[in-house]
Image (cartoon, rainbow over all chains, first blue to last red; front, side, top):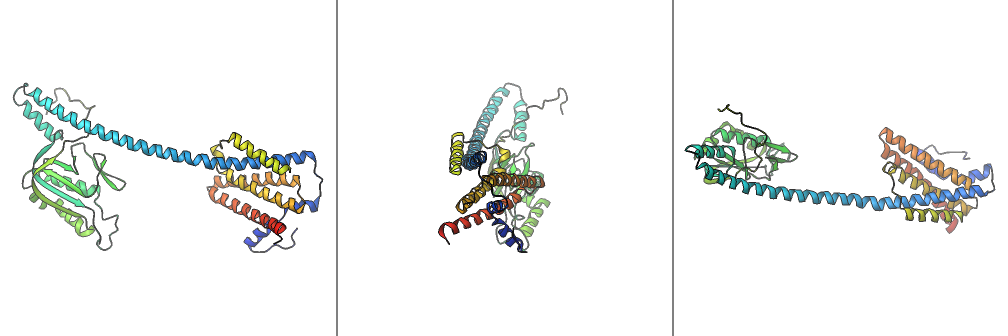
Length: 270
Length: 110
């Protein structure tokens, strides 16, 4: 045994690591090898060899398997998003033909019905519309940012978008689309991660809100409290917003699903 | 001799069966492998010293693997599994280094 062990923990660890078990055992009770123990030693060596190969195999096989799964997942995601896009396009086309067919059908259903149907279609976002109105563009702040503003704070948030849209409705807008996504009474504007979702589809900045309404919509909106709020956002955070009046604007039909479970209450009209 | 034969038999067995390591063993396998390396380097050193003892070899390997695995298991229960296996690997690696140094001194006389 060692007569002296260093005080320092590391030195001590190293000193103890150098202890030779075999030399110590030989000093205490030298033993002649016997057949059973030799076999045991051979078995332990075999176990060690097995361990090495097992660890090697595991490294070789498990890693690529995880990689495979990842790639398969990515493939499925892009596959499904492609399919979703195709379905949406199909829905749009079908909706357009339904609208046409309905118009055809309703022409034989008496006066007033066609107009009523059209008014409903306009109000529910079922058809694409065109007309005069205003375009509100909003964008994240660009450097240099105002003093004391973090880059994270200098972004257009879902709440800003909600405020702007509500302001436009208030100013008399009849139909609104954000970056080509039509707003309906069922369209949510919310945040997921870093992106603003409209109708569960992520938006790419900069944002363009197209609103069809009275031809003085831009002026009315510029004089509203909402616009004052947007200006406050510009001075405080550098978030850019600009509203211009335009003619001949178009908004697309909504691509979101119409309610399928809700039913009209019989006899409970208006 | 028996050592070499044993090692080869083990490796061949491993290649033939290419064992699927169950997931619960994930944390213990690397530690066991390092303990195995330590045992082999110790055995090699003692063979060169001429005092290899199969009893010491078997007992020290089994003991070390058991203690190392128990430590890692305990670390897992306490939420410090990763650090514990690092600690075990460091200590075993130090022993391997010491054995390698002894072998080097024997073989190259330097």
